[in-house]
Length: 390
Image (cartoon, rainbow, N blue to C red):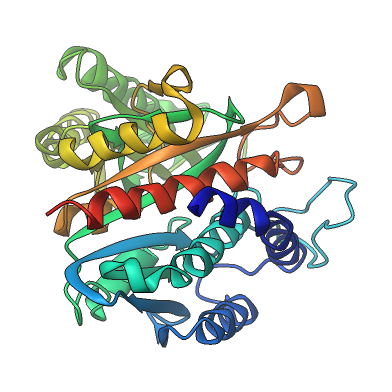
């Protein structure tokens, strides 16, 4: 019955996705998007809260029988990318694009809310639909949690999905335990002493120190951390020096650190500090390190992931449901999963026959919209499996 409802809502769901895609908004600025979502949920008769974590919206669906509270989450924000797709629903906002599938996530969750609302007389418990701002490196989930999104009523479990172009449409990817990495950031300032390049003995070259530090940090990854516990330390920007014949006195490096293991993640700042301090002082310089803990690793509960596998078998068949390896990308669904058991999974949205192959965060990114139907069915089946089991 639920699958037939989703099929009947498919065109409306595609329309919602295309409207969101045409009018993208950046993190914590999703005012138009949030307004559409709130109106839609109110029309379904849900209890709606707005302005949680700035622009976040929740809708609470109460079943007519007592039971647990399940949270289903979608992210709302777009990216600062100029779209280059030649499609009718191309972004009309210069320099902003839904290049990560969040438009589809919102359309899926609204459709699930509509489908489950029609079944509330047979629903045990409650479903809290969470539309979250600012997933893209801004930590909207953390802000919503701080403002009580997991309370009143208290959430017992949570599910989320991500449309992914690397998987073909019709496939579901799951992983128990860490599925996505943590992401921390750092700014490192190396200080030396300026001088004439013809007389290097009179200066302390901050660029040379920086080069040694970058190389040594990669040695930390390859020789201090177990190879079965992946870590990525990436220096993304280097700024230093003013002229070719001048020894640079200051270099600023910015980068990110990613890990799947919490203990390893927590050990990295101290390890970096030891290496940077030794090299900088040993070469006559000094440094300042600012290290910011960002997203934790996204760690899926084994029991909840088992439900994802069961739902996937019901929706796409067992042969289209498979375990994916963890990715070193990050996701702030991790903050919810630190608080409540749940699972985050991937829904295939690529289709080479239609030319839908571009990666996420690319100006030509798109999805096969049949993935919306798969995603909506998955969340509906998960709600049934979770709420109908004591």
